[in-house]
Length: 191
Image (cartoon, rainbow, N blue to C red; front, side, top):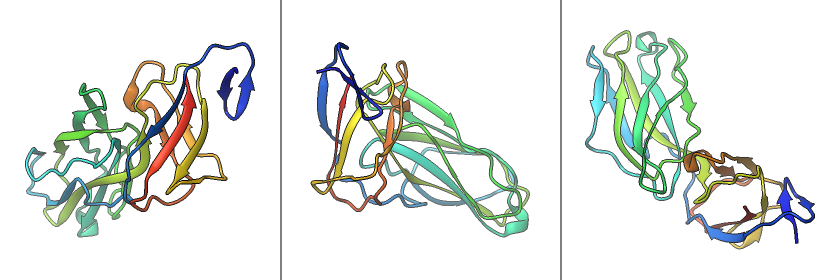
């Protein structure tokens, strides 16, 4: 059998096939990693009160509080990937004067610190949560080789969104078409 790429079989290519559990992740929540931190007029580095994701997945940041105090700033998250290697991601910038959620792309197994620049006023808050992108435990050097994904033992009929990287394991993610609900997720792929 050949390598599966985007649902197509490339005959003659060598591959190793995997059927991996990605755990039983719940739907992402805006405060899953850290509850809202109230701005104090200065940059803040948060290292306590952090809850690690139950499975490697992307993180989000949500601005809130007094809309006029929300600044167009970027939160930086540091932690580890599935291999225990330190990773850092600067999330997209908040929309000024609007409560918004921004979404990261790397899969964090742990979060060790959250760096929040000062907002425009102390009525603003910043929370860090989890998103829908689940981390794959392997690098996929041949692109999207995901053959199937199942949620609660039922194969997804719509292909997931797959992002791959041959070098950074934290950049290999899968986003199901169904909403995560705490049920088991399995993914079959080759590399």
